[in-house]
Image 1 (cartoon, helix red, strand yellow):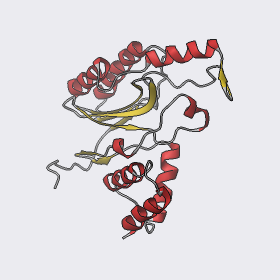
Image 2: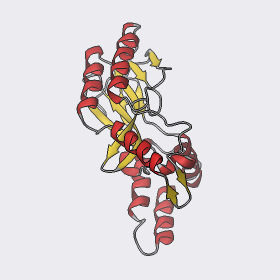
Image 3: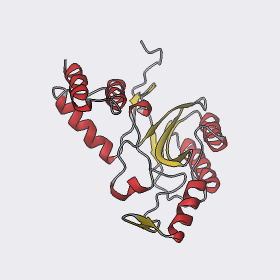
Image 4: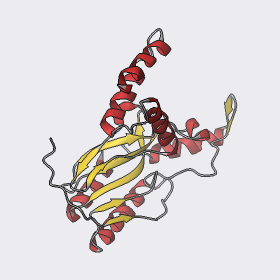
Length: 223
């Protein structure tokens, strides 16, 4: 049972602000300033756009055609990968410090770097500055799949707060979620149950008879 004391009213701020592509330090500076402004207006939950830190590369093609990538495109991707951030890391600590300074929950989209792979990730910070969890976009859309890795059930974070449970889903993630809800008898899946389900499906991906094992997992979750 949760020990969080529930509250019935909360002021939420949505940061409708642009990123600074390839300039993650400057993006964090901007995010810290916007967190301060939102908190000064009374916000206790502050939400930023997808890929706010690192940037959404709209219009770039990274020199890609089927079966090849040109030298200029490789250099573009190198810059994008270098601008992605470690989670946790020095820049996430700064975001956590900003959340703690104003006693607010902060939800922010970042481009996460893990080895040589970028992920479109959402980070959840608590009012004490702790990194409560992250959500990697499960299914990047269209050409996003050329630059972002795929998430899985291991990062389907559900955060408990005085204002209720919070989680996150991108456009394709929502479509998958609705299909799973429908498959499981039309009842919406709570975030922790959804994460458990997708984690089991992902775990079976490398096994022999994938289709049969996935059906068994889904049948179990319909009960």
